[in-house]
Amino acid sequence: MFSMKLMVQVKLLPSPQQEEALAATLHACNEAANRVSVRVFETGVHARVPLQKLVYADLKAAGLAAQASLHVIRKVADAYTVGRSQVSKRLVRGRGRQRAEGKPVEFRPDAAQPFDDRCLSWWWEDRQVSIWTVRGRVRGVPFAATSEQLDMLVRYRKGESDLVCRAGKWFLVATCEVPEAALNAEPMDWIGVDRGIVNLATTSDGRNHQGAGLTRYRRRMARVRAEVQSKGTRSARRKLRRRARKEARHASCVNHRIAKEIVADAQRTGRGIAVEDLRGIRERVRLRRHQRAMLSRWPYHQIVDYLAYKARRAGVPFLVVDPAYTSQTCPRCGHVSRRNRPRRDDFRCQVCGLAGPSDHVAAVNVRQRARVAWALVNAPIADGGPEVRFAELQAHNIPS
Ligand SMILES: [Zn+2]
Image (cartoon, rainbow, N blue to C red):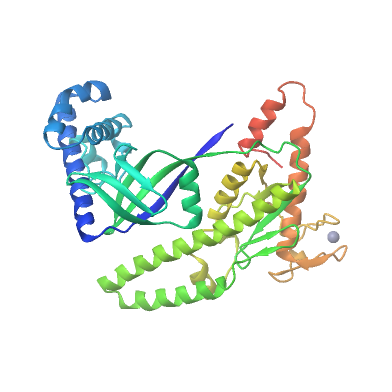
């Protein structure tokens, strides 16, 4: 059985007292990390075990619990091992290589801190955690999670969770190890998926996935954004950032739902899923200015990422095919012409007269390419067994 790692982020809703304890803990851990970092810089010792011998007693004396000390040491050791120029900007204060190389690695006071099961326990029924802090164990910290997240956490959470503070809000980022179903090696057929601007996804079955009221939602968001932007004050900018985060959450939610529906459909009907390799859909599509403002922020690629991982979990084969001319090719007679698309939403073949919504036609073309690609994958070849072909398939590397 294979498994894949997924991160689930839940928001903590601490009382003011609990919040004070959490903040004090992050600060204490990162101060300790900075002290350890200075020792590493001075002594050159950065392997985890020798470093532990060097600083563990200090950390314990400074009031960190045993597990927290070990996590701090590991965090610092990792920061030096991966190479200081590559250390995550999220963790480390200061920008630019000069700063990073001439000085010890410096951790931000609110850099994330990992907690394992000894320092953090989850109480699912109450939707609460109890967590070690420098003020002692804090019990009954409520967290918010969707029922989907909760289900994932209850079943698959494993190992450590990161305590994170972003813009004054508290989160736990938990690691889940989710088992994958065995790959369906003999799909009956393929569902071609066309991604678009108006319909987010259209399948070769002719099904549109748009998310009810989404266009209206995006238009409203664009209008609010324009209003706030025109003010240009600091509080307006803050408001704008909050807006952006809200929009991102909404987009992610819609993309999740669409991907889930398509994968469920594929699994139920024994088919695989094929998408076009479309990076930069925004550049490909010509839009009027007001459309551009409205659509520029939608994360179009996210839906493919979600499709890919949900397909993998469900054992549904997933192919990425060549996008060239899928929107101008007639699936019946093969005629390729820009004139097959008199309007953006309409397809009308100049030779055989086949007509239909252009996104549906494009999805059918994607399906056709997947069939051809699959036939190539399964064609008998002299050497390399089925394993080789599986490896290719899983890497999504099939040329069409
Ligand atoms: Zn035709």
